Structure formats: C-alpha cells, structure tokens
Image (cartoon, rainbow over all chains, first blue to last red; front, side, top):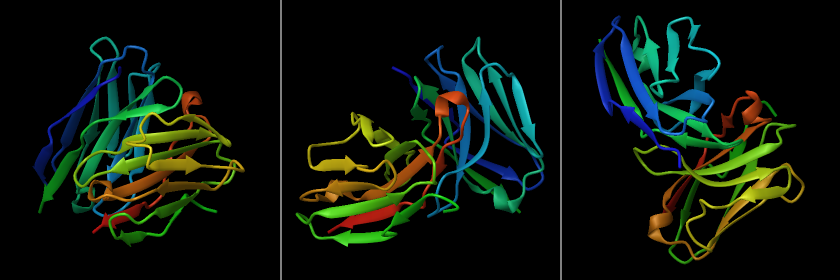
Length: 111
Length: 115
C-alpha cells in the first residue's frame, strides 16, 4: 500500500529565511498531493496542493514541487514569519479518496 | 454553513461510557471522512462515506466504533464502552470529489479524554 515519509520531523529556521520540508511516497499511481498546516489545538488547514500533471505550484510565499520520477514532493516557504510556526503535514491520495499522511514536521521560526 | 462543524469540542468520558460525536459537513459535500489524531501525530483514517453509503470502514480500530450518515449529510461517530486508548482528537472532514481535484476541509475536531 501507499506509504508517505516526511522529514525533517522538526525544523528550526531564522525569521526571514526559507524552510523546506520533503516527502516521499511509494505508490506511483498517486496523483494528488496536498499540504496542511496545523496550529496547536486547531484544525488542519489546506495551504497548497499539487496534482501529478504539474511540476510546481506557487502561492505567494509558499510553493510545492513534485518529482514524479523520484516520487517525492516538497514544500517551500520563503521569507518565513512567526505566524508560519506550526506543524505541517504532507499527504498523497491513494485511489479515489484515501489520503495517506506523513508524520508531520514541526516548524519553528526563531525571531 | 461556512465550514465543517463538529460537536462537542471537548468530551470527557469515564471508562466504559458510550460517547457520540457529531459532524456537520459543508453543504453539498458528498464525501465525509472521520480521522483519529493522537497527540503529535498525523491524522489516521477511520472511515469514509459517500453520501449515506459507508464505503470504507477499514480504519475503525474495533467493533466498539460505529459511524453513520443516514441522510447523507450529518454524521455521527459512536464509541461504545470507551477505553483510555480511545483518548484522541477525532476529526471530521468533507469534500466534493477528491479524485477530481477538489479539496478536503476539516472540522475543528472533538477532543475525547477517557478517564
């Protein structure tokens, strides 16, 4: 079955620097890859997603890249701000409905 | 409503008690999911509904867990004879069609504590 590995588990960056979180997946048939941000005690919120027919997608300071051959995708956050501090989860769609989740990355933005 | 609504927000139960958790999805969303999230971990799939049909319940941990969505909108997750290991946040999420590029939206969750 599908397996999604995410790293690092914790990432600490200086405010203003960039942060990169990487995920790998095992099922070559997966075609949808969302990223969710979850602040402590709150719901996961979709921040960006990408489908397999696209290699890169950008939304202001956030971008996602996908390498289908290598079966990995990455989240890039530029010019990090304190409000970016949260846990970030990647996921890969298996079949028509089941999202397989990474274990999460705790992003800490140091002032 | 504007988003996925879950109630109660917090639930404390004594071991052995039955609990019922409610999810009100976004209007018109065909797909509804229940996830369990332990502290510091990602969401774990429990079950999936398409309208009123429960198409996948493979993630339910035991037969003490039961979910329903009788009219294809509101869903209830019931846990019978709760155990301490059931303590977690239970998240509900809804979508139109994930496989067609639609998004999955989460509720705020119910934090269940079994004492």
